[in-house]
Image (cartoon, rainbow over all chains, first blue to last red; front, side, top):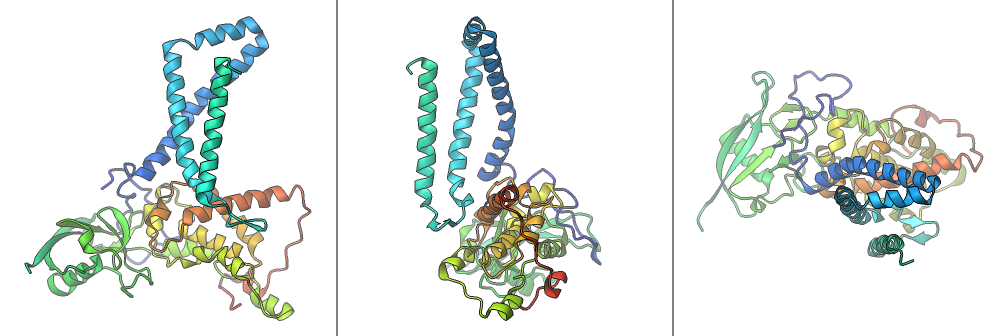
Length: 146
Length: 262
């Protein structure tokens, strides 16, 4: 049974009934069960995204400051801490992407205009392919291949 | 064949005597084809008549017998006892106040359900004006899946948002609202969407998807809620592109909080 607590007023009616009731308890497998874990991981990952975004802003700023500043920033990214952080961010982003791609098809209506929704497998495969391609593209750009 | 026995660990709560729920163990003989509900009925009939639990149809249609079995929300009339080991824990649905033993307070759920106006608005009036309401098979299939809900409340017991946001309308109610919005006979989309995108509406859902996992009828409330989010965003964005039509004057049926007979 979960040791966390539900809000005491969860699912309470607007007017109390004639008998005293026991307090509601949260879902029993929260947060260890798969879906709950993903849901929490996604929430916790927002702090990681905040840091990644801050880094992106630094890159943009250094571009404005000139080539020397940009090169210096790129050099600072070679620090092991930065490498570890970027690796963590990449693993997290890949995990979130793959998890939510699987949930994406059913967020779409059964019909899109006059057309039926494409098969779920096609949508998921398309999204994964897009993710893989964009990752390869960014990697190639960073490596200076392109 | 040797008689098989199982121990059911059942949550007990008597509001007149107990401060908090406790558990009690019952070791009972079980048949191979029993469902969890059969075991509870056996306890009630043969061992302890003070046990309280809800049930009715015994065929997964009425939605009365939802309980947490080994921590997962299940319809006990559908869930085979053989799926579990020697010990089976039966508790009332999570996220609900408990009235007694395995019986939860349903009034909060009924209030939330009513808020989304789960009835066809203006169908009768339109039929009078324009004749029979016709609906194609394709139009039916746009919402049929969402109309299979039996209000068993398992999705509420599985939802982490329900546990943390008391104003949240919840998976079944929101899916039902979306079901009526998708119905071509209905003309309540504008007013219903205002409710769906208000506080506690579809945008409170964080898409944990657990409601769809536990749904015994394959309704997929999580899918319905995400589709309703998309519809509401499009509905909101359209205001800047397409001049909004004046909403029809509400009819007597739409004005009252009770469903019309359309």
